Length: 400
Figure 1 (cartoon, rainbow, N blue to C red):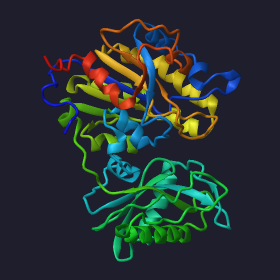
Figure 2: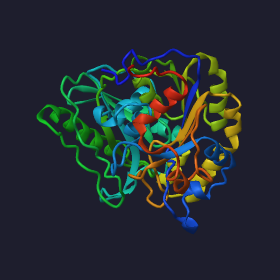
Figure 3: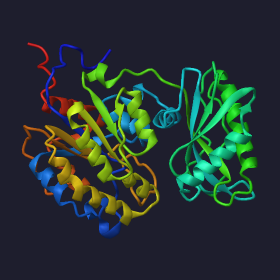
Figure 4: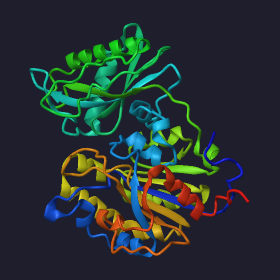
């Protein structure tokens, strides 16, 4: 049952915007400041003083979220109630045809040395054109494993999707990506007897890919992540009574959005393209999800300065978004990705919400340090949409 029964849903003509700067949160590094504290962000700083800020916990205290759970939380779903594999999200995001007998995995092209040791988990973020060449080779040379049809689909840069067809059983299998270099890939192991077939196919697929790509210099192996089937989850229309749309550039985020019933429109390739899409589709939806990826990518690369640069680029473009006059909008991240850690982290994420009736907010700027003082306090990400709906006049009073 939805946490928003029909007695609370209220029709309104208001517009809501959720802006996710992926991996926004950071930790002190250069000069004792985080990426957000280092960045020149006059527009977000102005909004922080004018409206309300706080910190958001993506899943649970001390838990490091993947991108799927992190986004599911800010969409208003408890991520612990909806375990969703990254494979199915990536597949949906690039429009792979899936059904309840399809197993998917989100894979990385990677590089291993002659001893099978991982030297680069992302194959140097190979160009997408190179990815497409490799995927074409794999599809030509690997068509079935253990009498099950398998398929390969290109994503962006080093990412691709691996599909197994006609699987009646479960797909509870661990990732083969150890999330580190200088060690060997993990073996796929089933978590229950009904997933043994899938584990066997994944292990054979890894070996076959290694054989096919053994002469490639940058991408000679693959790591499997988020092995999963299609879950059952209610849509945002069913749950919250809103018409929602996704504006993103990367497949995984489109896939997650599609899973919760959002329409997907072309977000182009740049932040400017995404703003154009926001303006183009403004009249057609109630709720807009706007995703910026590179804050996370540069955090994972450990590139502090480039992450700062993306934050500053977005802030400089923010007035164009403000000019559309959304009634409510929120700026936050799906998780923290401190450059100093080169990975997702368990730390809360800065949160800013603009709505018509803000309380006094005793902050000086939009940053981790100042948001800790904010009027919103520290809340769970799944409650962000409550505040957005309330500010947009889309929730009735509860009870007499």
